[in-house]
Image (cartoon, rainbow, N blue to C red; front, side, top):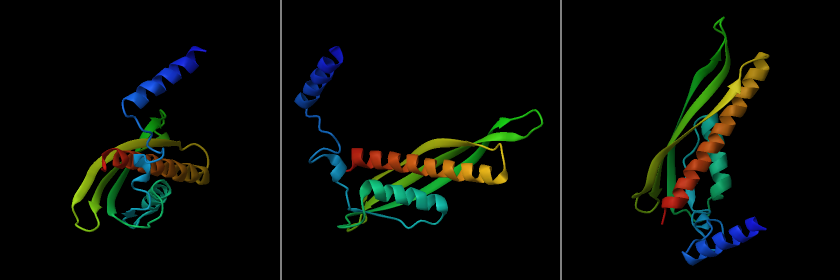
Length: 156
């Protein structure tokens, strides 16, 4: 009972201060829909990043902005046995991005986000390779989500 009342009170308080959901009608989430041309991918990691950005921002329609990016992913051993065999790896990734106005070339937003993912290296070579590819895909999705969140928060 109290949770419903608290949620209602919080909703009324947020509505009174001008709060608007990002993906609600007229929210900032629709502002960039179909308006961003993302730079072409150069690697498999870039492709996964681009694919998720396109899912979030929609396919190009009326392009107003160009999004350039640079991914960097480093592999770091995390769990090492006494025999010096690494059994778990961490992928530390960063995505530097620049959003520019397509007509003028003026920088609208720029920044860098970072995150990590990890995978187990125990098992067969095929299982380890599959686990690494899955971890790289998860990392690309996390970085793309962070970039979109930043863009929605900063682009007017």
